[in-house]
Image 1 (cartoon, rainbow, N blue to C red):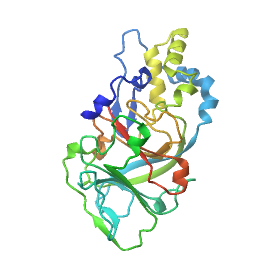
Image 2 (cartoon, one colour; image 1 turned 90 degrees about the horizontal axis):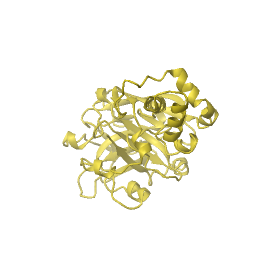
Image 3 (cartoon, rainbow, N blue to C red; image 1 turned 180 degrees about the horizontal axis):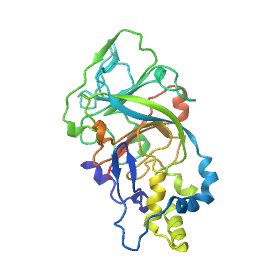
Image 4 (spheres, rainbow, N blue to C red; image 1 turned 60 degrees about the horizontal axis):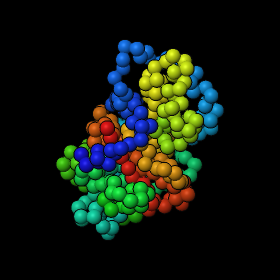
Length: 309
């Protein structure tokens, strides 16, 4: 797939994103273990992370974890993955740069979600993507923010009031290989409030672990006669950031495209075998927004990205 070419030449740190559970799909990117490698115990991992525990805890933020369930009712205004989309009467249906209709990836009904600071308390937020080999994302050269926020082949739509005259956009039937999901198989989103700390894939994780997480872990492993690869695996497994969620910290199979700036996770949809979701080769999709934009319910500048192995 064309996206794979984008990630040639990744930094070594990104390549060490190793193992995580994504709603039933296991990921493994670690080098093959040698006979000298020994599994890292939870106690050994705790000891390695102990000097960074306070800094890590200081990054704690709320998250709504999402589970997916079959949704044959496919109510147009429900929080769901795929299915039919609620749409205001008289509004042109969302379309890509080539004029082809966009497909509903997911939508969030804020009124039915647990309340979260900084989020709207009502309204419907919709995520539409194109049925193409990049799922509507922009990976052209140039400025990352400009490219990945340009809603040419994806669209983020927010409707504060769904009690107005409306229509229902049908679930399209494109080539499943050109989408991460089957829009004809709607899945209900269920939300569980929680909290989480900075993920190992987040670009800020290096700074938290002394400037270079890879070097820090290898030096510690050598000093304590541990498997360096095993320790890295354990760190990234515990703090992977994978899973479906609203808010919190992102997970990546490659590397964080954000190099800074005020971008935080809005929605993450992960590969999920049981729900029929697959981003390329067991990848993950992320949408980011500036907190100030979110507080204003301004979704005109959302960064959309995904990656895979």
